[in-house]
Amino acid sequence: MVGLGGLMVCPRCGLPVKAVYAYEKDSNVYYYAYHGNGRKCYLGPYDYVYATTTHEYVVHGAVDVDRELRYLGDVVAALTKAASLGRLGGRDAVKAVTEALDAIKDLAMVLMESGDERVREEVRNAVLNRIEALRRAVTE
Image (cartoon, rainbow, N blue to C red; front, side):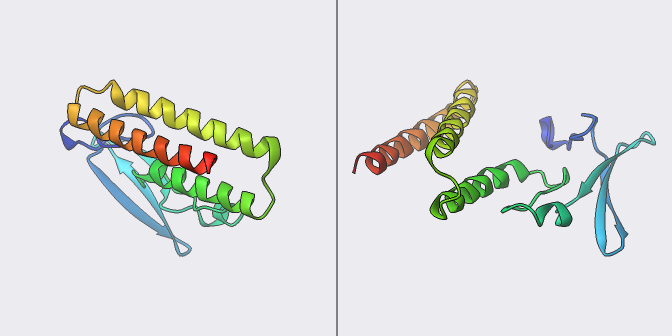
């Protein structure tokens, strides 16, 4: 949600955001991005309380700029819990592991294409360390 020069970019329409305002209704807080040209975009609540009751993780609104990072960890934790309780096994478990590894590979490839050598080195080290840990986990 932050663009070049630290300018906040609207996740709904892509326009620069001049301000984010909160609107309270029935003990819930909802957020809007204002663009300064009379236009506003609804960003939702910070947390979707009702949607979260049926999930193992918290569903966040667009105002939470780091929500994707939280989702990744939360979904993996939910899958791990399901596997440990016997609700996820066999082909479904293999599919979950394969899809997670493929998604991480795709993300690492995008990051390796970045022009920032420091980022590439951090990704390289993180990936190689995790690969070694995975190798040990599945062979011991």
